[in-house]
Length: 386
Length: 164
Image 1: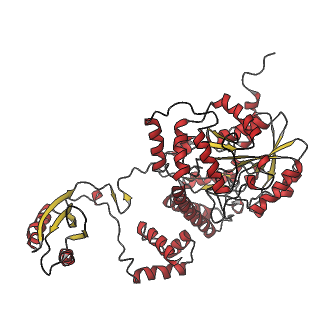
Image 2 (image 1 turned 180 degrees about the vertical axis):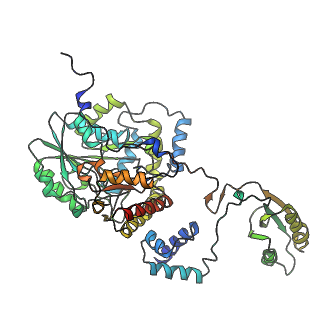
């Protein structure tokens, strides 16, 4: 008997829950605070480096694990910023965005039925990617009362003999939460005790406000069991260049590289030249963007407080995740009505899993003027729905 | 620390002087009282010398023009650069005067004047000052950016709404 035409694994994946009516969005007067990518264009010097790469003829495939000089620069950068020690030869691989990196990690590690523990609410690509390779998603709930930080007890309770990976994503999308060294130490302890590996997606690590980012890979015993993932999109406003990287022990990278070689050959060469410039000289531009995000973050926290909307004060990424339970509306109703009545688009918390019920995500990758207009609309909406 | 705060405050005010003390406090993570004190100090010390609206006069239908006049000066005994600059600054039609390095000495800006007014100013006023040896008047044809604000900017968000 023939199997169904399309992959059953693909069919088992639900379409993304963020539903957007694009025709509606283009109507005049609509404000969207929904996009999860920097509103800044790529800094000039970085763009220039990309242009130069094209002009100088660097338009060929790159080495499959990435340009050697880019890998060296990544090694120096993660050492400088997060005190991580990775050998550019064998412990680092440049990928097509952090998105491919996540996919590669799951493909390299998972066998049928292996369990992957994912703190929820979560960025919505982890689950489907696990499902695609036959892994099993096990959610662990994050709570606002714990500042959306993963608690070691909650984590440990979800562990079974089939558990293999824990996915960490701090600074966290969609809540803007961070985890500090002391929090991570407790998680690391559980991982060591149960022989679990960590896929740590730290794409927002440059965007923390007030507290310095700490990577779980920097903790004793954890480098050996962490797949560290980051990229250029958020720190250097380079989303369209599609460039990320993985740092992991040699054996893990060897397996990851195998998948990457067959699936992608190599990450885009031109982007890698631009990324080289970003790592060498981009710090100042990153700092400028971070200051702008921080201003907006503080503005939003205060504006939401003035509307008497409960809101956890985020310390990273560029999202706030206010609780809308008081309105008596479900997250989806809230978002739909807000759009109909005020032409303001936010993302329902449920797009990030059932635990997101009662919350909405507001992105502050928007100018202060846009945010102000958005908050006026939100305040007006709330005054009608108390 | 205080100097750094004042600098950040001035940067914000230079961009938008209508920001309230409460808003500035939020943006800088300081108390409104502290902002009030810093602002007072900046005014007292002459760091803030005025608050103006930035206007795109191109949007206002008028026939007026703006000009940059290069002025060369031959200093005379008892009449130095400062003295000449002050004389030029006194004219009402002048909106800015800068001492320059390079091929000429002063840049004198006139804004929103009729051609007649500009030529009258150059011939009847500037040229009659004793130390001025020559002038070159350049009309500004179009402004693209002023006071850090890009004029006529197509405010286009190039991002795509995505389901992820």
